[in-house]
Length: 232
Image 1 (cartoon, one colour):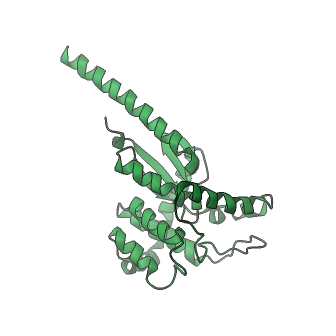
Image 2: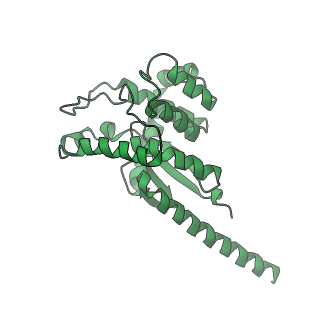
Image 3: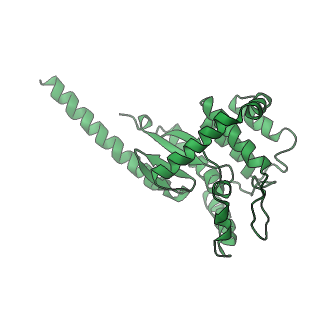
């Protein structure tokens, strides 16, 4: 049995630096047949639970900024927070704006890419454009268009669809969010294999370890069954 036959649900958000920082290892695991990624885009916590930003210790956000930059440096991955931030949020009060033109657009585009069977590819190209520091004003010009075209999709066509029929896309996003919680966590990146959740980019080594365990067990079972059938 090949590891690739074991699908891993990967819950990602376009505003999550750790989702972006996990992508390079996800790509490597896919190339080495260690995992088949079933990417499921969800809205950031700021959209799902805005009250979350009224509760944390004032040290939480500065540490989050420091840690995400440190993880990127440790992994050797180019990194800078997107300009503009996909979430419209007051930097002092942390109040989440009622109107969110960026993140709804990105998440719906991701849901549409999912319908085309290109969620993983879309995540790689668009998140890299947002987070690697090479693009200012990603929402202007042709930055997003070029990222989407590398996936093999047409941004203008996608934009028309998300404006004309947002309902089914929002329903898909909400379904992913329900499945995320049912799997046992609310954060991203969240990886789930056969019902077991692994939260955070720092759990990917444990995920790889579990995949190898499951594959080895399946290979042993296949060998035993084959031997039994041959001698029956």
